[in-house]
Length: 353
Image (cartoon, rainbow, N blue to C red; front, side, top):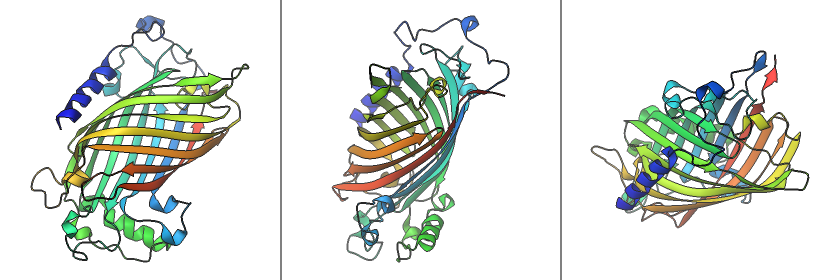
């Protein structure tokens, strides 16, 4: 707990510290560009789905349905920022696609999502001895907003998520519906009557990300390395984390620098890899409700994760598949758990009306 607190404090100080390089130094408001007349600002919509069922290296009848069993999120990113985002980037203008590489601009990401957690099939409440030591059923349904301060080489984000756990998070409904529609799992979901109870939730997030690239003589990016450091604070999740993502491929573009979208190649393809470590001080899906927790397990304070995958883009359409493996998250849990992520987005660069 103390280690996580120290890490969280360090992360916050790092994220909110002003840039030191001359390229990213604060410029007078008067020198910032205004939106060009007749130009439509860039935007992006993305969908992410996490599920054990996407572990394609296993037989379809042998894919797990446990631990972090499902996560869905829809995000819309637009140019500009809410008033609370502007407080962290005074004088910055919304991204309009005309920025130079040394400038910073603002976008906002609005999201809705749901995460679900269950024990291993056959280990439901009342089925095996000491079932209380199995992972509790839990669901988190949320909406979020994130202010993003972007430059060509860095991305800083400050976000807020509001949501609920328990019955109003519709975990049982979502799992039962998915099983009926897909037919992959014949077992009826049971045990949701023992899930983490209802609790309104809030999570504040902050993250600092940088991008380093390797290019050919002609200037095309063929590899990148993207380290990050971040923190989450709230009754749902409190943790500090650090890690990296890396890609190797052809015609790699910058995923957040909207001003580069207009001049990028019409396609790209890449292999992906990454890793991160988390120092967790609270996780409601393991620690139980803040007051009067009926279900809880002994959480592991440090959790590791690594991922591999493949992705590509054709004009504005991006698609990725990643296999993610997480280390033990609680004392009586498995030594590791693998799930996969499917990600699709559609990106529209700035353009004339």
